[in-house]
Length: 294
Ligand SMILES: *[C@@H]1O[C@H](CO)[C@@H](O)[C@H](O)[C@H]1NC(C)=O
Ligand SMILES: *[C@@H]1O[C@H](CO)[C@@H](O)[C@H](O)[C@H]1NC(C)=O
Ligand SMILES: *[C@@H]1O[C@H](CO)[C@@H](O)[C@H](O)[C@H]1NC(C)=O
Image (cartoon, rainbow, N blue to C red; front, side):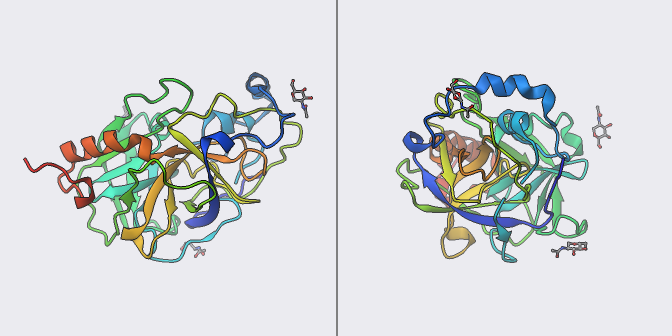
């Protein structure tokens, strides 16, 4: 089992795919999800201590943002690391100075929130004293998470015990369903795996697993992977505050194998819930949410 984790934040450009084109590229790959589940005993489940989806977990032969590059310093500062006992589990996104949006499936990995922290302003996770570590005071999972299909509405909000004091740019949260357009260029960020496994002979399809709360993105030899879950998929603007958050890393079969694209929670589908909770609970809701004064 080769594992190639990176401790430096990486980014990678890929192309957005609409749900209708969000499937395995070959018709010969059909409905054998069960088979993947049954091979469970033959594959390693936990690569380091990364959190990843059951899909990826079950099929994971070796780990992988794959094909990415080191993110430029002091850019994408809204990207945070969710850690448990000092170990990176997932990515997350600051959408207010006291609120992090992440994938719901990341929160189920943490049983004791007292030993969890959101790490802000630390691009190189090996540098323990860089940036800030903030506690989470409240966790909210989307009420329709897992309602229809696995990983449906993979959204969770982490309310921080205090606002960040770091110099961060808060990302804009996408509310428009038509964004991103099909084949629009998007960027994914994270500290996840960077090596690719061997996917020959794995026979599964995405048909029936892609809901309206999801979208795909892919690019030859580039993808998000284990450890990237919960992190941002953005349409890049000129700077942090003009970037548009369109997705969260959610799941996939393998990574960067050119057959199965990465699947992302579609932020516009969770927008109303996100806005309501941020308006109710954030001490400093950003203007973009247009919260009613109270
Ligand atoms: C994949 O599964 C389908 C349906 O069972 C089968 O017809 C096809 O031969 C399989 N492909 C491979 C590469 O195993
Ligand atoms: C939870 O974590 C805190 C801080 O690490 C620790 O003091 C506490 O004992 C833990 N609680 C349980 C039930 O493990
Ligand atoms: C990350 O920090 C560690 C510890 O200081 C250092 O050894 C390593 O070279 C750094 N990595 C990069 C890519 O800067």
